[in-house]
Length: 330
Image (cartoon, rainbow, N blue to C red; front, side, top):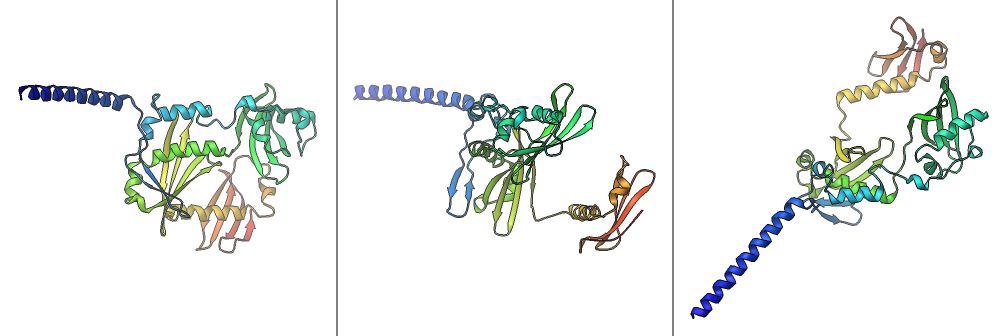
């Protein structure tokens, strides 16, 4: 009997020792291991993706943590958060490849050549074999460039080149993400926003919502839309490539425009209508510093004035309901 008791005591000691080591090991793991996304994804055919979160990771912390394996592997695989193409794969564009539709001079082609071989532009343009350019001179040796798809006339991007030193001063080229890159970034963005306290509070029972994430290449933003019956929310988020961070800009109801937004929308429509006035540019052509001022006349009529700080140059009385110009003058 004594031998059995001693044996049981030894077993108990061994068991307690093993548990202590396991607890110590788990404790170390909890400190060093990257946070894991544990949300469950429930897929219903025809209803988009739905999510029931159960401890999502906080990407605001993990994306800035150099030990985050998910972020590090993603950056390593893509060459950076916003790396769309590899420069090693970018084909070199030659002078004879360039068509400038409004200027046949060699200098205009050389300006475009600088821009077309800048960063990953040549790789981007290779997707549009019939692309064309328009060139204009902003200042001495400073040229502006617009790029278009020669087949569809779709505007592809803009740049500014200093021809004197052969550099690209500024550029804006909205690019779609590859399917693989979009999926990788979407997963990171969704993991981040599903841990946002404000969003979770507004959704309440999140499992009742459908959602889908899109990439807006014009704003370089991710837009995650949530739907539940007639209710809708949209989360606008961005990836900061310099700091490898994700942040949410807004969480809003797309159908709910504030009074200020509604007023601004009507004012903008009035200005757009006024711009259609036939003789407007006869009054503005030689004036550099002018502004537009919009004043309501009644529910649908607005006075749009084009003026400097000293004098009114032109006015248009417009009707936003019928989208017509009623009267113009100086």
